Image (cartoon, rainbow, N blue to C red; front, side, top):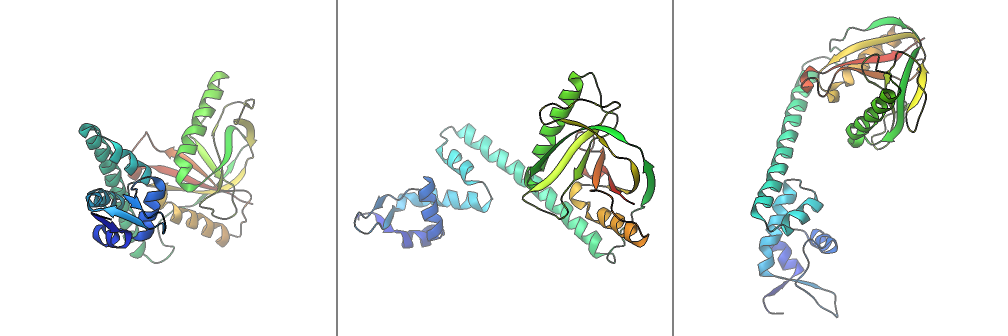
Length: 269
């Protein structure tokens, strides 16, 4: 086939693997210029190498394939620039996250295991009326779950003429960590019991003794706070009396992640 190269040679030219090229063909992202009707072998034109190079670079920058498809189909230079700028901002956000994680790791490595400073306190709590939404979410989808659930709760109690009586919280019901299927319940304390409606459930959070500590900083650095409370519970002869919860004293919309304040609460007996 004139001006055509087989998929293997095209793969070497554009530095994309043959499985990747086949996948892009299936997605309609980069179709072969021709397919041999007898053998099914794919051929590409040399003119397609530039398009393949664009895809390779965009994938190296972790742009999702659907966004690459939309970007390559865009003919308005201003729209192309806007899409690239949006992805640049996304990458910069990831870089800041990685920097924070590296700084956190340095702090962990600089200390003996379990010595990060957390003061654990014990107090008695009373029965507390709450309005909550319970559901399942992967870890990656939790921000959207929280936002939607809190919005529903505030809308519901607002229609009833009620208001939150304290900061939002989340209860983690899983006995073990599940990255793809977290069983969580989020809600607000309320001054008086409220009726249930839709996903929003009005119930009472049982009182009793709790052990707690305050974590200062981003949510993804909260692990040592959990370990500090768990160690205190074990060392002082207590047992868990229910799932742990987080109370978001200072969170998104109130401060930058470094200034977040989260109370880690373990019901104990």
